[in-house]
Amino acid sequence: MTRKTPEELRSWRWYGRDELRSFGHRSRAKQHGWGAEDYVGKPVIGILNSWSEQNSCHMHLKLTADAVRRGILQAGGHPMEIPVLSAGEMLTKPTAMFHRNLLAMETEEVLRANPLDGAVLLGGCDKSTPGLLMGAFSMDIPVIYMPCGPMMKGNWRGTTLGSGSDVWKYWDEKRAGNLSWEEWCEIEDGIARGPGHCMTMGTASTLTALAETLGLVMPGASSIPAVDSAHLRIAAAAGRQMVENVWLDRKPSTIVSERSFENAIAVDMALGGSTNAIVHLVAMAGRLGIKLPLEKFDEISLRVPLLANLRPAGKYLMEEFFLAGGIKALLNVMRGILHMDVPTVTGLTLGENVDGCEVYDKDVIRTPENAIQPDGGTAILRGNLCPDGAVIKHAAATPALCQHTGPALVFDSYPEMKKEIDNMDLDITPDTVLILRNAGPVGAPGMPEWGQLPIPKKLLMQGVRDLVRLSDCRMSGTSYGACALHIAPESAVGGPLALVKNGDLIELDVKNRRLHLHVSDEELAKRRAEWKPAPPRYHRGYAKLFVEHVTQANEGADFDFLQHGPAVPEPEIF
Ligand code: FES
Image 1 (cartoon, helix red, strand yellow):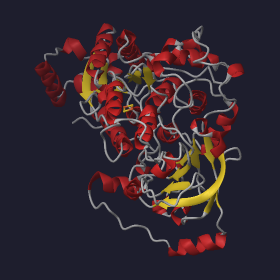
Image 2 (cartoon, helix red, strand yellow):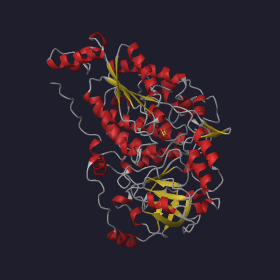
Image 3 (cartoon, helix red, strand yellow):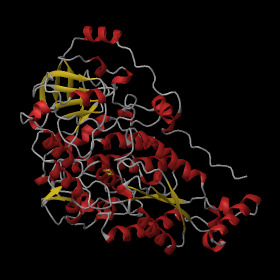
Image 4 (cartoon, protein in one colour):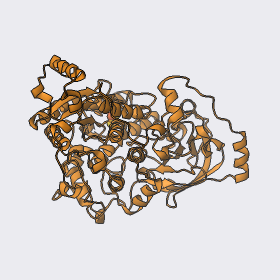
């Protein structure tokens, strides 16, 4: 690999030349207190920081940024911290997914518009990982992703609490009358005990682990808890590595390939990772011109065992995963399954990065011989109800419901469902298949995490805790239950889900990957002829751009105009 000269640095175009604009750029650098010796002819490294008081998962990222800055300076680079959209999962409405593509656009344009030779991207809360990486892939300058790390495990009266999963569980108990208001408040006190992202194997833990599998994270960083001092030490290492990677022009297109994505899918299955990983991996790959048909997920799922014993599919939380050896140990265990020769940001291969990494707790990280289940945690469904696919995390579903036929009960919107779900006169039995529609990429918009529809109170009181549930939205990676999600095409654009009527028989058959509506083709054609789309709701702004350009779930729900294409020219500097 040849090293760049200082004159070949991208930042040289801003700072190094003898012309009017360079005078302006250098004089304003002096306004910061930076002399030419600080940055001219040195790699200028952006620290794209998604810190915000809007996002408690990222509350410590100012400290992380300081550690990255220290590493950049140690290696002879020049740090430039730039804030970017945070899109915290808890507060952003209608869903942070609605803003993932906005973050991706912002990341790409911030990287392009500024004198940056490379960047360390700070994120971790669900959509920040794909958003930052999608933008970085499109811009394609050297980057390292620095995850914020998971939070400590929660605690209530000596019982471990897991983000998300235990919220859904105890909410159902409260609705069933089994939990007092005081107990509920104590759970609120103990479930989020400090900085970091959700500490179950939800979307955040999944996506940061997959970013590391793709070769874009310093080895082991995705498993380190946010409050562990190793987090700051590895952040500094990321800063040092980033400077070296700029000199060597080690950019995403030289690291990430179709084989890297096959690794990421395999690790997702071994982790029992979030169903959201599918839509994000498809979108990220699309930015590099790599197609990931849903069948690839299913093919890999059928041959990769579930190895990580982590909630919601298993027993433990991220802190225990880290102490058991973390992602490095898991990758080493998967040596016979993964392409270990793929490159990474360290300049070493994935296999070299994890060589010798041991498992310290064999119940948390299993071997293929001692797997939790012989196949992966997620399945892709096909059928007349989802011609372009649907997703189910059967590892976290009641096994008996994975082969089930029952009558449909349809809700046309989330508000309608919320209003009716606790109606004790609801015509429902444990066999009912609950359906939520108009909740997909266009319909909601942004396919929120509504897919784990609440169990109706009438059934909760009978002791029922799982039902077959279908929707064109997503569910939280911390959720569980027999929920078929991401149904495509979605109902708002006329997908078959729009044609279901109450009482229609629906068959879910996970073993045979089938989701079938038992209504004749003639009857469906009649219903389709009568179907009318809802009138447009948005006439200006980001929401209008979103609904006019978002693709369906099986295509990653990216904007059609952001997918891979001819490179956008570098900005002129006049
Ligand atoms: Fe940030 Fe769960 S709310 S990762």
